[in-house]
Image 1: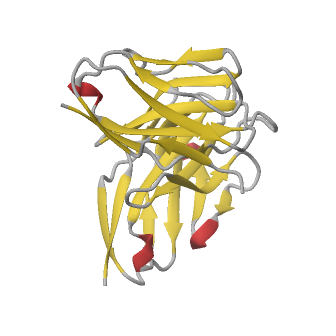
Image 2: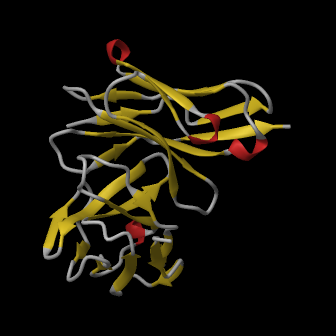
Length: 114
Length: 114
């Protein structure tokens, strides 16, 4: 069975600083990988996804993520954080032979200092 | 625009009562999912459905049931609510086309069991 670990429960960055949120997964083959963002009181919105091909994927709101097979990682990055990026971020993995089910990490709450 | 809605958005109930949470999507998606979100656990899958008359148990299905009588709706029923079922519940849907695709999430239902 697949699993996802987000090592950082909380991260605080200053507005304008760069951001990297960590995600490690466990799965025996090449996974489908997703990053979702949840603003307070809202549902989850997809930021980006990786299925195959180029290991650096671009998403919405200026986010990108890099799939590193050797490290079983799919870290989310943004070069300059805006106050509106404050939210909770979830990494998720889907198995290619398990239908459309996703396994989510525990989430990372991002706070942005002015 | 297509969307996925949940009702009610907030619910307070008493231990032992039966509760039904509604989920309605207008994406015409085959796949629908119910998750619960608890601090430190991310989202955990309760039940899911790949089409009409199809239902399957997820990771944390005990005490919950679903039924799928049409494409648009997947109501979640708590047969006898327990305080451990106090949580935020999210419904999601996705299409089968093209393999594993992103899930679209509803706004969530906050359930409190007293």
